[in-house]
Image 1 (spheres, helix red, strand yellow):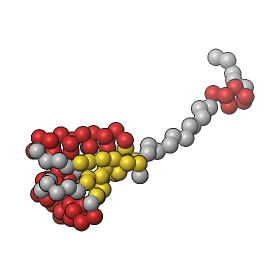
Image 2 (cartoon, one colour):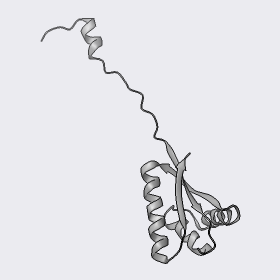
Image 3 (tube, helix red, strand yellow):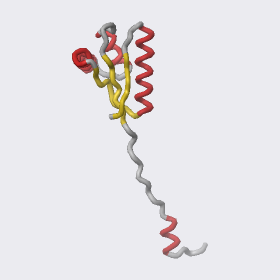
Image 4 (cartoon, one colour):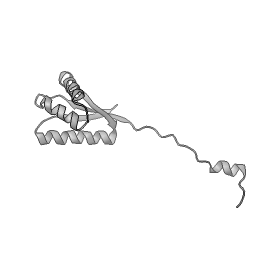
Length: 103
Protein backbone atom coordinates (compact mmCIF):
# COMPACT_ATOMS: atom_id res chain seq x y z
CA UNK A 1 0.00 0.00 0.00
CA UNK A 2 1.26 3.40 -0.82
CA UNK A 3 1.13 6.14 1.71
CA UNK A 4 -0.88 9.22 0.84
CA UNK A 5 0.38 12.68 1.44
CA UNK A 6 -1.78 15.15 3.34
CA UNK A 7 -2.68 16.88 0.09
CA UNK A 8 -3.97 13.67 -1.47
CA UNK A 9 -6.05 12.94 1.63
CA UNK A 10 -7.71 16.37 1.41
CA UNK A 11 -8.64 15.74 -2.21
CA UNK A 12 -10.33 12.48 -1.24
CA UNK A 13 -12.66 14.22 1.23
CA UNK A 14 -16.20 14.45 -0.09
CA UNK A 15 -17.76 17.86 -0.29
CA UNK A 16 -21.36 18.39 0.75
CA UNK A 17 -23.71 20.07 -1.61
CA UNK A 18 -26.51 22.12 -0.14
CA UNK A 19 -29.84 20.84 -1.39
CA UNK A 20 -32.74 23.28 -1.53
CA UNK A 21 -36.10 22.26 -0.11
CA UNK A 22 -38.71 21.68 -2.81
CA UNK A 23 -41.13 24.51 -3.45
CA UNK A 24 -44.57 24.06 -1.87
CA UNK A 25 -47.93 24.56 -3.54
CA UNK A 26 -51.34 25.39 -2.07
CA UNK A 27 -54.21 23.24 -3.27
CA UNK A 28 -57.31 25.43 -3.45
CA UNK A 29 -60.99 24.49 -3.60
CA UNK A 30 -63.32 27.02 -5.21
CA UNK A 31 -66.90 27.64 -4.15
CA UNK A 32 -69.75 27.14 -6.60
CA UNK A 33 -73.54 27.20 -6.34
CA UNK A 34 -74.07 23.54 -7.23
CA UNK A 35 -71.65 21.34 -5.31
CA UNK A 36 -73.14 20.28 -1.99
CA UNK A 37 -71.44 21.12 1.28
CA UNK A 38 -71.54 17.43 2.19
CA UNK A 39 -69.59 16.52 -0.95
CA UNK A 40 -66.92 19.14 -0.21
CA UNK A 41 -66.53 17.71 3.32
CA UNK A 42 -66.31 14.21 1.82
CA UNK A 43 -63.55 15.32 -0.59
CA UNK A 44 -61.62 17.06 2.19
CA UNK A 45 -61.73 13.89 4.27
CA UNK A 46 -61.06 11.36 1.50
CA UNK A 47 -58.43 13.18 -0.59
CA UNK A 48 -56.81 15.47 1.99
CA UNK A 49 -57.26 13.26 5.08
CA UNK A 50 -58.83 15.97 7.25
CA UNK A 51 -60.93 15.09 10.28
CA UNK A 52 -64.69 15.67 10.19
CA UNK A 53 -64.31 18.86 12.24
CA UNK A 54 -61.42 20.25 10.18
CA UNK A 55 -63.16 19.39 6.90
CA UNK A 56 -66.34 21.14 8.05
CA UNK A 57 -64.38 24.22 9.13
CA UNK A 58 -62.54 24.41 5.78
CA UNK A 59 -65.79 23.84 3.85
CA UNK A 60 -67.49 26.72 5.71
CA UNK A 61 -64.52 28.97 4.96
CA UNK A 62 -64.75 28.06 1.26
CA UNK A 63 -68.52 28.65 1.32
CA UNK A 64 -68.19 32.07 2.95
CA UNK A 65 -65.09 33.43 1.21
CA UNK A 66 -65.27 31.69 -2.17
CA UNK A 67 -61.96 29.85 -1.95
CA UNK A 68 -60.04 27.87 0.66
CA UNK A 69 -56.78 25.99 1.11
CA UNK A 70 -57.29 22.24 1.26
CA UNK A 71 -53.60 21.50 1.82
CA UNK A 72 -50.01 22.49 1.06
CA UNK A 73 -47.77 20.00 -0.74
CA UNK A 74 -44.83 19.59 -3.08
CA UNK A 75 -45.68 20.10 -6.75
CA UNK A 76 -46.13 16.43 -7.66
CA UNK A 77 -48.34 15.67 -4.67
CA UNK A 78 -50.40 18.83 -5.26
CA UNK A 79 -50.95 17.87 -8.91
CA UNK A 80 -52.10 14.42 -7.83
CA UNK A 81 -54.54 15.83 -5.26
CA UNK A 82 -56.01 18.24 -7.82
CA UNK A 83 -56.53 15.35 -10.26
CA UNK A 84 -58.14 13.21 -7.55
CA UNK A 85 -60.58 15.99 -6.62
CA UNK A 86 -61.49 16.63 -10.24
CA UNK A 87 -62.03 12.91 -10.85
CA UNK A 88 -64.28 12.48 -7.79
CA UNK A 89 -66.26 15.61 -8.64
CA UNK A 90 -66.87 14.57 -12.26
CA UNK A 91 -67.82 11.04 -11.17
CA UNK A 92 -70.40 12.48 -8.75
CA UNK A 93 -71.66 15.03 -11.27
CA UNK A 94 -70.42 18.10 -9.38
CA UNK A 95 -68.72 21.12 -10.98
CA UNK A 96 -66.28 21.50 -8.04
CA UNK A 97 -63.08 23.24 -9.15
CA UNK A 98 -59.69 22.59 -7.63
CA UNK A 99 -56.50 24.48 -8.48
CA UNK A 100 -52.98 24.88 -7.16
CA UNK A 101 -50.66 27.84 -6.81
CA UNK A 102 -47.17 28.40 -5.40
CA UNK A 103 -47.04 29.15 -1.70
